Amino acid sequence: MTTFDTTTWTRIEPPARKVKVSIDGEDVIVTEGATVLDACRQAGVDTPTLCYGDTLTPVNACRVCVVEVEGSRALVPACSREAEGGMEISTDSNRVRKSRQLVLELLGSSVNLKLAGMKHWMDRYDADAGRFGPPGEPAGAGERDQAQPGHHHDVDGATAATVTEPPRIDNALYMRDYAKCILCYKCVEACGEDAQNTFAIAVAGRGFEARISTEFAVELPDSACVFCGNCIGVCPTGALMPMTEWTMRQAGTWNEEEQTITRTVCSFCGVGCNLELHVQDNKVVKATSPEDHSVTSGHLCIKGRFGWEHIQSVDD
Ligand code: SF4
Ligand code: SF4
Ligand code: FES
Image (cartoon, rainbow, N blue to C red; front, side, top):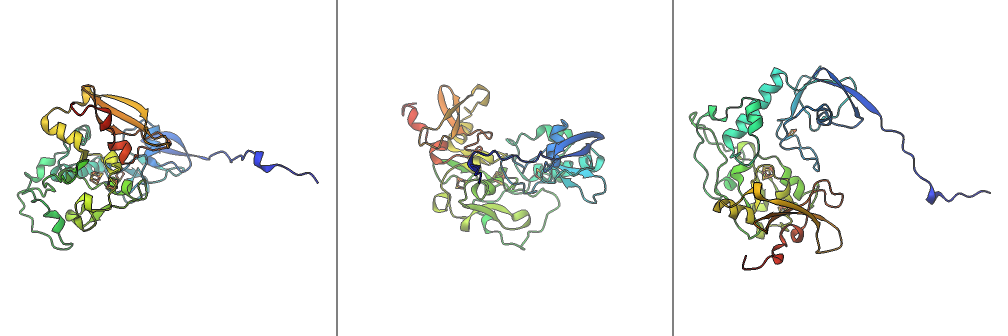
């Protein structure tokens, strides 16, 4: 009987099937399983996204990426909807533009978007966040943590509700400024199943009082947080920030235009995580990790993200 050494066989997969969709009247062919957002990108259509991340599971939280699909009653989130053969997709219809405009206005009226890099989208959709009135009273420290589901304040009709509250600084490594939080869930995903599996943070509360919180709103050092900083890595608005960056921004010395980014390998262990060292005035000011690296997909542990100060003189 002939015997075969199957360990040397090469597995041949069937070729991936393709589907054809129409984006604003142009035919686009994508691999089966691709999303509408993938198809839009392939067609060169710039689609705004906030809660979507290439390394995270889509949560459909922000709805700024919506498109119109022929035959679909509701607008469709491009970031999570799978492209199906024959779909006729409009990315710039009046309905899409109005929807994106309102999402941006509601966010802009209630959240500090200074570091979110959304100005070009605000301009593109003519979003006027000021039309709901000036921001309402900011909350005091810890006040939003006390909000009870179902107990809402009456609106005054003259000011725009805001999530403004004082920044939270309770440890030496990173700070949280939830006045800049758009509740995109990315940090929760990175802390949970998409990367860290620590589950130190989650969304607490309901409606406008929904907020990112540790268990029982305890300070970070008393929570399950292991200070990997993966939540910082995915936050799109600067709500989460290393203390080095925060301190320099407060002092007016943070200057991204002057910074260089050097890619290297973390030396703490043998895993091989890639680091991007952000250097300003010959000093490391922040460490990140490239999303396209197969070992980390942009994520790190506490040592890689924060353990670089030993390479600098204490006098610096
Ligand atoms: S630093 Fe890491 S463990 Fe702590 S909240 Fe962020 S993702 Fe979770
Ligand atoms: S803290 Fe940042 S990542 Fe987390 S929900 Fe808010 S904006 Fe998103
Ligand atoms: S980016 Fe698609 S729902 Fe947020």
